[in-house]
Length: 375
Image 1 (spheres, rainbow, N blue to C red):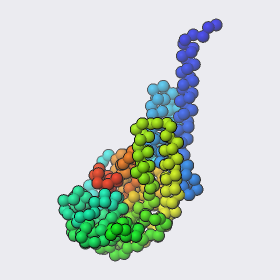
Image 2 (image 1 turned 180 degrees about the horizontal axis):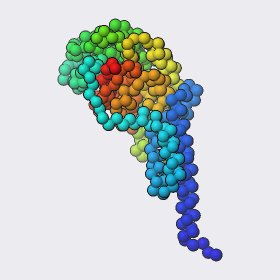
Image 3 (image 1 turned 45 degrees about the vertical axis):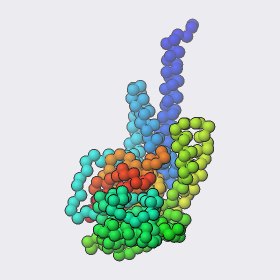
Image 4 (image 1 turned 30 degrees about the horizontal axis):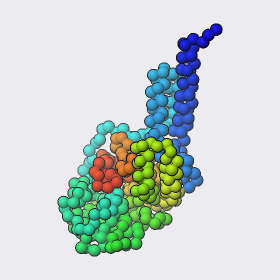
């Protein structure tokens, strides 16, 4: 009996659906595995760190497959996808919070700004003036506490020195600069904190790194001592050449370059993941030891919300953006690397309001700020 075209079509349809189902089961397993990066240290294995980094792409793939099965009316498969998405609710809502309504901060709230300024784009050959874009931005935000990473300033008052910046930003009488590398060419590089409130104590948290670091400040806010921890965790150290290679690959999508790009990223990212893991453990230990009235942890973690770094430091803290923001909140925005890697976390006796990522292109990072108030 000859095979009809209808039978051929039905065979192809079933084969295609079986293939898509296999792909879907695989992506669901990847999605479930990706948030194991919250609990498994990259010092043990890098697999889950990479899956955590790929979390948004895996999630989008599963959502597209869910739509496909809805159109195909395969409701058992639809239910399977929904069950897995419900299991993954916590990482999904952490990565993509949907806080639609933003309440106003109460009187007495403090505003904190965290900003990786990338050395102010190395435009330090002249003194700070009020009309410089970065100064205008810092003034316009009018934060009570500013924490900066990759802060760079001249050691001479003839150029853009810290003292000169403090004079331009007169509302910040208290400041601290902790250098992270030896002064080179008359410039200091490191972590900075500018505060409207007295900084009572300053301490470096001892992490192992050549260029990165963590600073801890005890700040007296109207009689309450708040511990503020300013982080710049291990950088991925992608050079301009590395970024160009990655950017060109995405533009041209030359499959012949895939192995080179993958190997290059693995060499840089893998090393950074392994170095960050003990740094994160150290910061988490210091956070747990604090007995002050409140704790704020902010800065550039160089890791996404679905990572060991994020979850280990956060632990008993709250993420102000996850609590009050909307959308992915991308803070690093150059060379096709779009991730939220800058955070403001706080102890549970504080409440966050209006955490915002400002789309100000004065650095390769966007600044992030939030209002915090005692409950």
